[in-house]
Image (tube, rainbow, N blue to C red; front, side, top):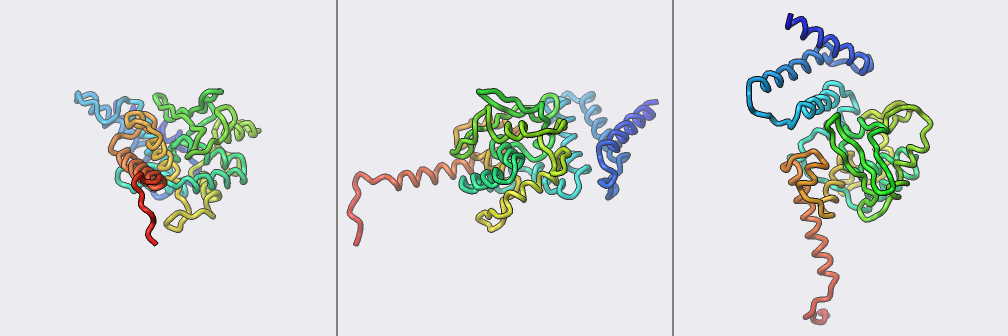
Length: 297
């Protein structure tokens, strides 16, 4: 009877996956029955550990585990093509990847280029650089997740017990509208559709990872970094994170905003220190020393 109950659960999940995922996206031995069975076994393993051990485990709650499993399956088994490229960047361990934040002129160039293209491109770049959320988190946003009034604006990230992330109106020294009127509010006011999704593909359907990649490449194609290549999508989040530390955000508070642990944030702290040291050295060089001697001929 117990085995029969597990089988019914797996069949229900498999049917839900068939509705959620287009038929042409299945492949590489990734069929709904196998994915549903794997998900069920992961949950059963967690249940067994919870019942037989006093250890809380690495998740603060059951909802946190479910949310992470959802992201894992969406970014792994259910990702195809461009989805995998975005997902790979989103789930990379920040503590083992080099920090490559973008300089201010390039960020402002990206935003201005997006502004000239269309309202949604501008809104997408504004959210990426103003809120610092991961691409996978952006794809899950719906209109109801955006909170705004004249004094603040924020995004609700995650499922159930998610986190709230403010959207900055100041990005690397420049102000992009106000809390009440900015690229995101203008995009939402321009929409005539009924989709709950916050962003859409070019064909009017809810935004996918491939669609987000397309928008990003369309905006950054003519912009080159120090390596000679266009900026990467994950650099937007890295740039935001470094900027927040530069502006004085405490490490404990960044753990809350990002949902990351300290080892993941450590490289961003170091990068912010490096940039602060460079800025301090430039300011010192711009001041005339008290005991300055005439320049050599």
